Length: 329
Ligand code: NAD
Image (cartoon, rainbow, N blue to C red; front, side, top):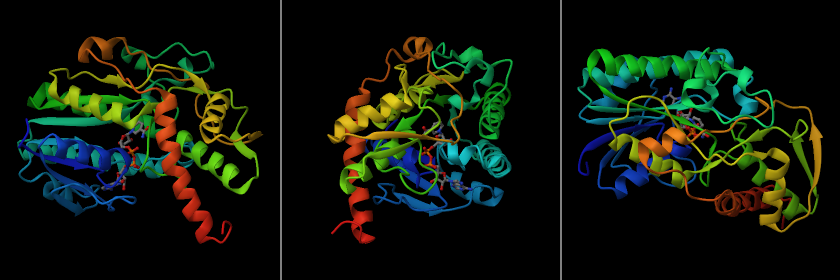
């Protein structure tokens, strides 16, 4: 309800930063918390605190006086990052989520939003590019590919038990590849859509058409634009639904096709060079049947439109970067 006090953790990150602005527009009083301020634009939060949420005392500080929590803070990144930092991710994210949830309970928080991931789904269901879209119940028997997904699954369980045993209204979303402007694009934590925009922008601005792609590029994913993500988060938080719910697009595309799509937006001809690199699962798509049933809605923004908006922002970042380094004059 507008006017309520809410906390957004991870408010210095990609989705958290956008979510703060979205909730402010809806009339909420918002406290943002993160290890860092948003990198690319100033926050719209009423209050922004730099806190390490692995620490219990900081979690108590973060939740004081708020009625709702949107828990987005996580040590995360694209495939390159999550396939190489299992111990760090498991350690940090378990601490963040355990402490944030318990602090919220003690503070009397009424609604708690936990951001899980499609990475919870078992590897054995994602071995083919032509993957069958993943339904929420497909998560068992559990076999996430990475520690990142295992932690998400455990924290989902914790949120569900807090609902069952303590009566806290917990909502759990499983994001499928959210993308858009104002996210990591060049720091080693960027995900495929941002990395692809960067590579194509470099090709366009420098005239070198070679774009490197990890693996054969035939691995598949679906991608969801940030504005749809925000609307889905908000709709779920207003609902009474407390089971995990997919939130993503259900249009499957190969990474090679994604490269062509971005090149088309940029108006440049590229030469794809396939190199060894972490690829994650072979195929992953969202089954949105339950999303439609529960929210009476599903993501609306096409991949072409979302990528065009994202590409425009990233090309501008790349232009500044190449100019600063003296590569462009
Ligand atoms: P992000 O990395 O941009 O944002 C996460 C934020 O958490 C960062 O700003 C980081 O500084 C902060 N953080 C990390 N450790 C912290 C700590 N100890 N204390 C306080 N803050 C800390 O990632 P995002 O894409 O905005 O993701 C938001 C949430 O959604 C995460 O929980 C992520 O796992 C989940 N998710 C995202 C995607 C996606 O496609 N972007 C997909 C699935 C799940």
